[in-house]
Length: 139
Image 1 (spheres, rainbow, N blue to C red):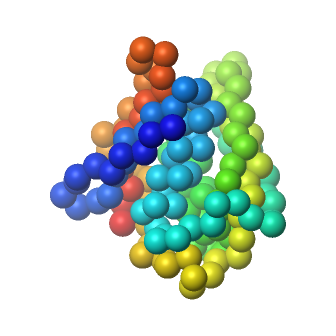
Image 2 (cartoon, rainbow, N blue to C red; image 1 turned 90 degrees about the vertical axis):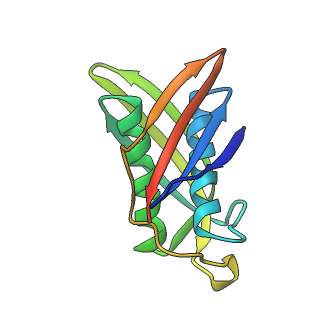
């Protein structure tokens, strides 16, 4: 699993690479946590389940990240680990995930609010057997 920061003039971005589609979404969680916290949790004692649908993988990735942002900034739940499953369905994709995390804590080193994941420059592709994505966050 690879997460590389991107230089972007107004926002924050990162490149993701994973062997599986599920791994790509797990890497997206890791990338988001790296942007938001200095020392995010690596797992957690609390659990939440998540189910999302979208017509394409780009929209599914944006919805996943935006749901994570909502959980962190509105519900005070910081997911440190995720088990993700992505299935193809008629008309699109379904993501189901179990998230393990902790209540928001100052010790995580909050670095600032993220408004949302964007579609700007968003790409999800499979190249040479690996899944890749580029994500830009509006901060």
